[in-house]
Structures are given as C-alpha cells and as structure tokens.
Length: 465
Image (cartoon, rainbow, N blue to C red; front, side, top):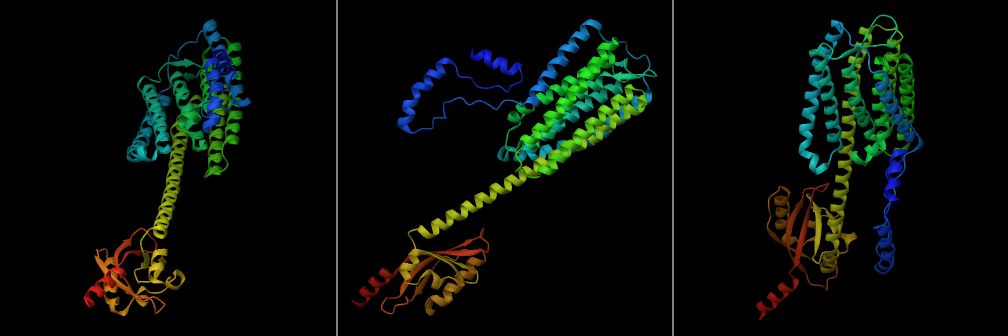
C-alpha cells in the first residue's frame, strides 16, 4: 500500500512523500514510552511529509503527460515530413556568427568559475553552482550552433504549418532549446530558493521544467508532421502548456520568502524572462503566419539565444554570488560579535586582575579582580589615564612599556604600584603582561596582572629581620 501510494503521488503530480511501512509504524509506537522517559524529541523518528505541489504545478504535469502522449501518437500515425533540399546560406552564416559570439562568454564564465573554486569548499557558494549551469547552457548552445554551421543547418525539415513560401524548421535548434531553456529556467528561479540547496529546489521546479521541455518537443513536431489537424492540435496544446508554465512561475514567486535580499530585482528578472519567452512565441506565430521572413525569424532566434538569454544568465550568477558574499559577511559579523562576547566574559570572569587601556593610556575596562586588589572601583578608573592612577615611581616604566607595546613589539613584564583610596591599605604591587588587541576598534592594550603585594610584604619583613 505504501509503495502504491508513492507511485500515485508521482503519477498525479504530487511531490513525493515519505510513507511509513507497517514495521516502521510499529517501531514508532514502541519508541514512544522510551521517548517519554528520556525526554528526546518525538519528531526524530517520525517520517515527515514533504509539501505537495500546488495546483499550478499539477496542471503542468498533466499538460506534460498530454503532450508526450499526443506527440507519440502523432509520430506513430503520421511520421514527419520531408527535409529541405536547399538551405538559405544567409541563415547558416547567422550560426557562424553566433558560434563566435559565444566564445568570449564561455571563457569569461569559466574564469569566474575557476576563481570561485578556491572558496567553494569553505563557503559553499551558490554562485558557483549557477556558474556551472550557465557553462552547461553555453556549451549546449555552442555545440548546436557549431553543428548547424558545419552541417549546413543540420537536419532541416520543411515547416509544413507555415503559410507562404517554403521555410525551414531547424531541428537542431529545437534540440538546443529543449536543454538550454529548462537550464535557463533553473538559473532564473534559483535566486528565489533562499537557503534551499539546488537539489531541494529542483524538486519544486520540476513541473515547470518538464512542461517546458514537453511543449518545445510538441511545437517542433507540430511544424513537421504531415497531418495538418494533428499539427494544429499540437500547436494549440503547446501554447496552453506554456500558459500553465507561466501560472506555475507565478506560484513559485508567491511561495518565495519575501525577506530575501533584492527580492524586487529578482521578481523583475523573472518578469523579463517571461517577456523574452513570450517574444519567442510571438516570433514563432509570425513565422507560421508568414508575417515575418524566415531569415528575420532565424536572426531573432539566434541573437536572442546568444545575447538576451546569455546576458540574463550571467546577471543572475552575479546576483547569486553577491547574495553569497552578503551571507558570508553576515556570518563573519556574527563570529566577530561572538568573539567579542567571549573576550568580554573572559575579561570580567578571569581569576586575575585585568584592565585595558588605549594607546594613550586611557582606561577603557577594569575587571572585578583588579577592583578588589586595588580598592579602586571601575567607574572611578574608566576614562582616566592609567598614569594618573599608578604610583609616580612607576609612571616612566609603565609609559615606556605602553609605547613599546603600541609599536607592535613585546614589552616584557613591567611592575606597577598603585595606592588604594584608603590610606590604611598598603600599596598594591603588580607584575603586568601587556598584550595589544589588534582586532579591536579602537586598538587597545590589555594588561594581565599578578598581585605581588603579599610577596612584597613578605620580602620587606625578611629584610627588616
């Protein structure tokens, strides 16, 4: 039953969900008393259902199945039409130019990817994932345009749905679209994924990718099948499938986290993508209706593939990489703040007298132990010069030590004597180790002391004897 349910979910357009088998459910019931005794989370061993696809995604799956079934039936019953005997040389020259225009884009994206690999293991940049997708898209385009330019357009069938003069249907171009367009859809939508991995987000994006691939195949077969009724049926079906894909795109945008950085720009990029795809559909229909010459149609397709889609994909990689760097910056800020908090806790709770001064000697921190040892409270010490607090006999030595430490050199140990506020208390003597805090702003010097008062008193007592 569990396996049948999973299969039904996949077949009818629901996201795969984890269904526990009977033994698993029995084990779960046996674990409940132990979970109650140990206090462990009861969610650890309970299978969680993944969120089902929305209606738009399920409609995309239905249209995908319908197009695949219809295409197979049309191919089996009617086959495909004849090839072009003569191919327009001007159109083939367009493919030569497209191949040359793609080379700099591939080299530039490859250089970016190589430079980002030094950081990908540590930072796990999403930008490098998208860069791989862009290179895949460029390589597909380069392969297809090289094939069309080298083999005189490749297999060019007669467009049997087009009115007016005979025009060609470049099969290799449709093969390129069937791979490059779903790849571009992934690149275009991945910035909306937030912190989801590419594999996780691809499960949600799959219906759009599937229906896009299916309507590209169906629109090609609509042009080359000899049966006019079957061709027009596939053509209408493919455009309805495109409408379903647009609907699912709107749902993906609605599902995205509104708190993502640059959300308005990402939505704008999605809108531009839909405008470009709509323009492709319009060019297709104008070509079928003989309202646009074959050369103009192929020129728009070629420059649209090379320039519009390539630039759009590269911009999205830059956006995604900028997000990764911003996320890294936030993570570093959190780590710095955590480091500062750890240093503050260590400063105040360390079992040693510690204080901090600026390079000019102004006290900026005064912990509890030095307050007890010296009798000088923190509010009375902070903001004053340490040279005004210590005994005049040690001012010169302490000043020299601070200057040495400020220059980045080690000052060694330095002795310091302070007179407590109460005249009844004896002078406090300490041995200080000075450490410059380079990462602080402003730069400070931390003095870690060791109380020598008792040692000095014992030494004076021995000398008096």
